Image 1 (cartoon, one colour):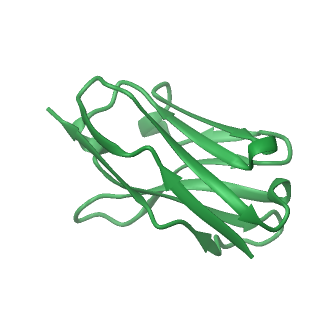
Image 2 (tube, helix red, strand yellow):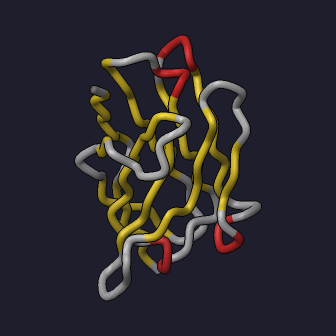
Length: 119
């Protein structure tokens, strides 16, 4: 079992920055893949970033590439999503999720944190 707790959301003006954190507890942190999902009104939840905790291999989708950076601190069992140059369309609920490396589905979820970008 893995427990995930997000923090760092809030209200920011367009062009600003936020850093989201996802703190994990429970089973061995480094044997998992952790992803960030974004839920915006009227749209399906989308994966926007993921990181392989064992080796730090990170990926972000094209819509946030160059603006968002995904990183981890295994010693703190925490993953970060640094979001720069935020746009109003980045507004949504951001959730972190985890899965064991060999499991195809994300089975552990945090409660989500709201990010609102004003124009």
